[in-house]
Length: 105
Picture 1 (tube, rainbow, N blue to C red):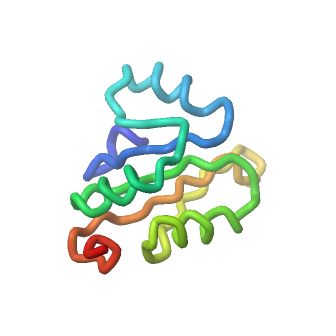
Picture 2: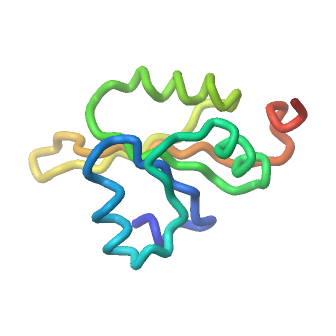
């Protein structure tokens, strides 16, 4: 799914176990990091590219924390579910825009 997104986001994988399989499956074509760098994320967002965070678990309070640290508006959240309907991964995507007020600081 990540490789088919347009525009292709920069993806952070802060939770253990996601980065390696995605890198292997995509052939390393998706720009990514395991460490969330707030300055880097803001530079990417201000360049007009999206930033996504692949999140395991149900601690959605982390989403608000990232939005606050990035000085960015709320993201869209795409849940990926297993067969029984339980959410396994949330893909949290912040939409890049050079017009965002955070880009002026």
